[in-house]
Image (cartoon, rainbow, N blue to C red; front, side, top):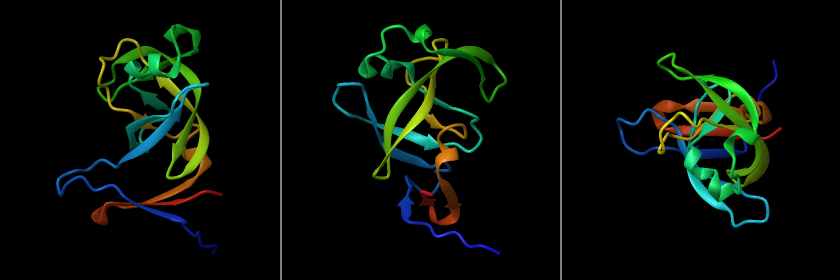
Length: 138
């Protein structure tokens, strides 16, 4: 049996009753100043979905110019979303991630880092009792 070496340990605690793994990332707009945002490590999200209010900061003026797909919220509501290839920095490592933006969702929607294109690029284990995310970049 092979073992996996984790290179980064990140404390995501925000309080004893907090059951989300929130982390800070930076987003890099083309030719712009990096943007610091909070995102949730969401293993239940098939794709990353971010707040549409970030679009102008990324230099995106028309959300519908991205690749269209359907997104389903936790309450089973479906809506159109549009995906963009965005450069981010996660725990000191730059990576390109496919991020969707949903025009129908309200501003202030939590940013979710999901399975496709984000978790596919790394190994993550959670020690949730200790509020730790252990990360290895292959």
